Length: 243
Length: 257
Image (spheres, rainbow over the protein chains, first blue to last red):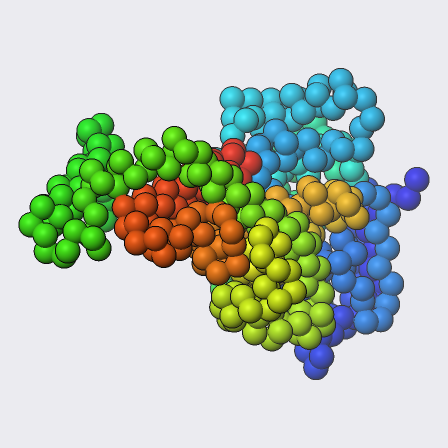
């Protein structure tokens, strides 16, 4: 078993004359939850596209060993399928129908949408839809979960709730996670390691670790401390000496 | 602006309109605004309609027209949708063929009537050919536009969940375009029904179009109006039938977002 399932070595990406990354190196361990924050347009999503294989680097090496699923910002559920059918997509590889049924029920229970199994996405609220997306991506035997601003289209309270749910789901179904977000709190509340990216061409200008277990309170001193450190990195708060 | 919920009697409103229309029609006929020979009364039309049904001519014409419309329309759909799918996925072929498709789409199918008769004679074939020419190009265009507008994220999801080949087509592409394609089928079926009447007037020996042409030649304006009424009603029925498709649960999303 490879215990660094995601790895970039000296990866560079450019689109025409726009250089997104230059010689970026990064390793992510099995089961680690890494959040990537940075100014908009700095290439956060490009990073996910490299891992998902949607993009190949202009130079350098990208290693991604394991089955990858991505959760997008919004509206990536198939609208012609019910919530249950969408989640069942994640279980396609299971050969036993009984087992598929059992796991589907289990996923619906996990996101507390048993009663909405037969609803179509357009009949669900934004928060419910994102829960179905998470369930679809976590269903079945996968290893790596890529989250592309998964909660950014939700209102603040729903976002807080879904962070808790994601933490709870990952407890039951551990995955290696890369979360791309512009929500600094989200990164601090969820991730084991936070990478702060600079402007283009992006490099990792700061790495922060949060060692307390999930789910974490948003007001936990260490979460608050981390938020402050990130804001200071962006020049939005006065840097004080970190104890 | 939100509409107030309508009382259940509102469903009777179209019947009221029908009643008023017949009343005005009767009044005009009674007052002889036009000579009786060119302005038949509702009663004369009803009698004519009864006569046509009893002799079996009307049912025969109806079957002939419906057969032509169904065949021509189905041919256009079963060839047009695959061509649209292919063009929707291939930018080069689309660039190459789109002007030609727009050219033929803009050409009134009636312009083909002389060739239809010269190539296919009189009867079913020329009418089917004309209906096909009327429907094929709009179906191709609607399908390719629908394919080109599928959000790319669906294909990325499909890749994540390992859909490929035939499964990608039947589980992703076709369901994604279904609402738009069905809307275009409703429009196109209406077009087909317009064209069959015109085609039969010139290149037919039976069918509803021929019936009203024949009535005109025999100066039987009552039968002519009876034919017009049947044509209009059948057109409404065809649209109703196709509208049922939009109520299918896995398709309704396209109309409710």
